[in-house]
Figure 1 (cartoon, helix red, strand yellow):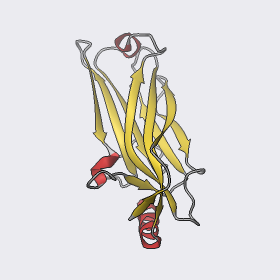
Figure 2 (cartoon, helix red, strand yellow; figure 1 turned 135 degrees about the horizontal axis):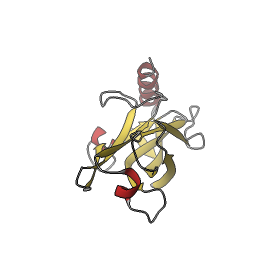
Figure 3 (tube, one colour; figure 1 turned 45 degrees about the horizontal axis):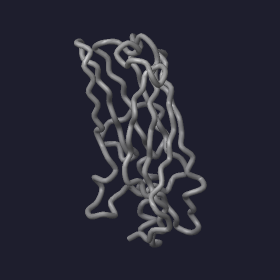
Amino acid sequence: MATKKSAMFTLTERVRMQTTGPVFATIDLGSYVDVGDRQALQVHSVDFIFQGNSPNTDMVTDIGNGKEVLIQVTDLNRGALVFANDRALVASGRLTIDVGGNLSMESDLYPDNYGKGSDDGRYIVNDQLYITGELPASATNGVNVTVRVNASIVTLGAKDFMAIAIQSTAADN
């Protein structure tokens, strides 16, 4: 289906969430995706790193007990958090601080769930990845989330590229 053009590399973006509602950021993929050459980005995994107001502050102090931080990566701009059945969803994560101040972190969806074998991944043909994060309005301070996307560049066959592009366009409606 795909021919690798590069080894795996990592794209990163840090999102600063304040207490004012959802925040948005993008990762520009214009240098990696080329429609004419049927070049796509193959996302192998997405990691979320949660940090407090500064790199050395306590998360419980910065967010507060009984709170939840949500973060998602999509390949279409939805303008809000999406449900897990949205085809644009690439990965999502959640940090929960219970009322006792205990932290737990989970990633709901990894791109490598989309295939079998060592070449698993999600093929992206759009020119941006969209990050949406949300911190509860009652949080004490802000939080920083670093999104790390492990990916490689691939060339797809004409039929495969067209199928992914049509699916992505159909998901936009």
